[in-house]
Structure formats: C-alpha cells, structure tokens
Image (cartoon, rainbow, N blue to C red; front, top):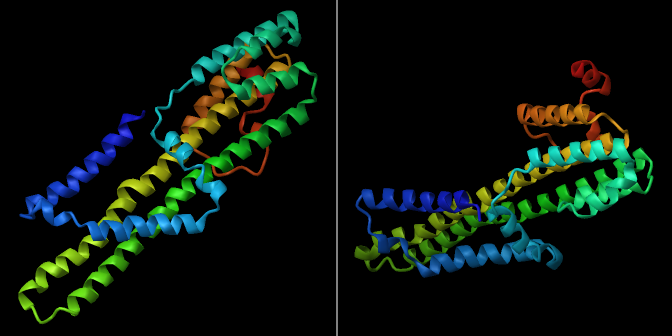
Length: 276
C-alpha cells in the first residue's frame, strides 16, 4: 500500500479538526449522523445512477490502483531490453522465445511474441498502441468515477444544509435553539466540501498520476520492442531508452495522443550520431 495517500488524508482531516478545535469548537459538534447520511448516501446514489453496472464494478480496481505502492521499474526494463537486444543480434529473435515467456511484464511478453512470430513492424505498432490506448482509457474511467463523486458531494452538502435550515425555520418558536440548529445544518456542507477535496478529487488525481507513469513505462517497452525487431546495437538501444526516459521526465506528462507514440523519440540518425 502507498502510505503517502493514507497519510495525506489523515493529515488533512487532522488539520481541519485541529483548526476547528483551536477556535474553541467542540469535537462532538462535528459528528452529525443525519448530515453524513445525506451527503455520503446521496453521493453514492448519484454515482450509481451516473454509471452502468459494468463501470461500477471497476471501483475496487480503482481503489487498488490509487492505494497501491508503485515501483519504478524503468531502469530494470532498460537492462532487460538491452540484454534481449544483445541475444537477438547474437542468436536471432527466435532465441528470445524462452526469455520473453518468463518475463513478468505481460505487455513486453506480448510484444516480443509478435516480433518472434515475424509480424510486420507497422502491425506491431498498431496492436501495441491500441492496447496502450485501451489501458489509458480504462484508467481514465477509474478517475472519472471519483471525480464525479467529488462533484456530487458538495452539492449534496448544500442540499443537506438547505434541509436543515428548513427544519430550523420551522422551529422559530424556540429562539434559544436557533443558533445551534443553524450550526448543525451547516455540518452537511462541511462534510460535502471536505470529502470532495480531501478524498474523492485527490484519489482521481492520484489515479491519473499512476496512469501517466504506467503509460511512460509501457511506451518505453514499446520503443525497446521495436528496436529489438530492427536489430539495433544494444549500446544504441540503451542510449535510446535512457534518452526516452529523460525526455519524458523533462517534458512531463503529455495529453492523450492521437498520433504514433514512437514519434516522441528522436530520429534514429540522431542516436547514431550521438553514439559515435
């Protein structure tokens, strides 16, 4: 589990409650079951209405993606690809069949198998880019569910507050209870805004960040697969992939791509010139 997201949520809650208590508030004043029911129950219902069952079933996977600890394996993948390029140049691509079948990354296994089967390079690019786009679209679907919840929660908070004020205005015969009743009514707004900005929207952003990192890694594997198919020198493959990682870190995440992903890498001639 990625402990940072848990610590972030806890720190945010502590900051809010601590600030409230610092101003002389009472902790029990923040605990309102009816407000929680309206905000969280209403948000849950709105999300269920907004998405088909097939999308709602992906929520557990979205939680796992947001809360799981991400390991950066780019350097290890570069070493694996360079080793495979050396094996391919020395013994031919068929020698990669056993090595590729044992590799833990499914995307790399699939791409190498296409190379071993003698698939044309353009077809390999199309197949693997289609898989990348499919995964990217799936991750965006994960994020949109939580983003929707982050949009509904504040609105449900306002609805809860309005309902509370209606109840208050119906009890004007007791002026002494007017102030506390209004304060209780606004707890719903607090729940809605706080949950949206501390839980739902940050989780959506975390999913997108994880997706961007995964896309960079898969782009790296795609570049390596195509380089192996071209029979490029292992030293050149290493230089190309290291340049690719540096450029991704420097330029930052890109918007969804409508062009070939391999266009993001400098032309082959430039690598040959720099390798000399």
